[in-house]
Picture 1 (cartoon, helix red, strand yellow):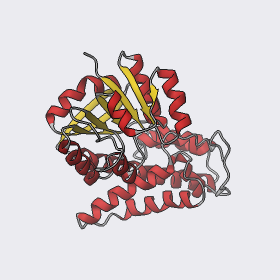
Picture 2: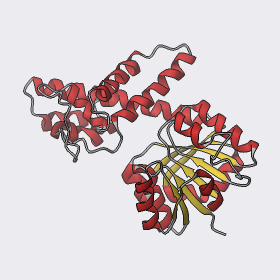
Picture 3: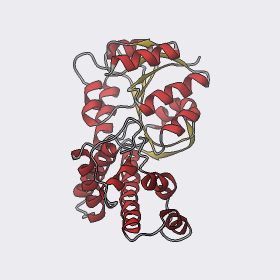
Picture 4: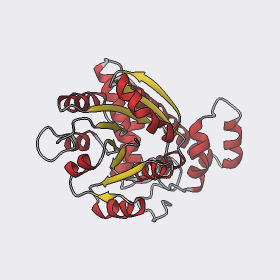
Length: 303
C-alpha cells in the first residue's frame, strides 16, 4: 500500500516537494505550517488537510517529511511533552530534511525511537527548481532500515542520493557543502565587485572566469544575478549565515580554525543586519560592488 504522507514546513522547498510527491502518485494527506494561510492554500491544491495541530498531522500520516527553519523549530515539533509530532507516533517514519546541527538529528532520532517511531536525516544540496522536478541531491543518514523504508519516496524527489551512514553524519557533510558554497559565493562577489570598480566588462570577466581556475558552480548560478542585481531568492542570505554558523560550531568542536568560513559568515550576517537577509545569497554582491550597499529591495528581489 502507498503510504499516507504529510509535510511539515511548506516554504519554498517543502511546498514543491509536496507537489512533486503528489504528481508522482503519492497521497498527501496532511499539511502543516506555522503560517496557517500558506498551509491552507497548499492543502487545497493537493487535496490534503491543513492541520491545526502537529498531533493531527501524525494521526493522518504514515510518513511525515519535515522541512523547518532551524534547530529551535525542530526541537519544538519533536518536543517530548505536549502536542508534538511524537504523540501517538508509533510506527511512523519521520524524514527530516532541514539543514540543522548534527546533534539535533541525534536528539530527534532518540526521541522518535522512544515512542516506537523511526527517524531519517535527509539533507538536501539543491534548490527550489530541483525540489519541484524531482532532481534533488540528497545526503542521507540514519538506520539502514529507515533508509530502506524511505527510499521509494526519496527516489521520486532525488536525481541522485548518497547514504552517508549513521545519524548526524549527513548533517556534517551538508554543513561542509554549504560552508564551501558560501565561501565561493563571497569570493565571486568580491571578484566581480573589484572587476566593476576597475571598469572591466563583467560579461567578459565571467566568461574568462568560466574557462579558468576561477570557475565554480556558484559562477553558473549566481554570477549573472550579481551583475544584474537580480537576487530573487532560491537560497537566502539568512540561511547562508545560519549554515555557515553550523560549520563553524563543528570546527570549534574539532579545535580547527577556519578563517575563510568565518569571514564569509560575517558577510552574510551583515546582510541580515542590513535588512537584506531574505535576498538570495547572490545578494552578497550588494556589499562588494561599488555604489550599492542598498538596504531596500523590491518584491522581485531586485535592490
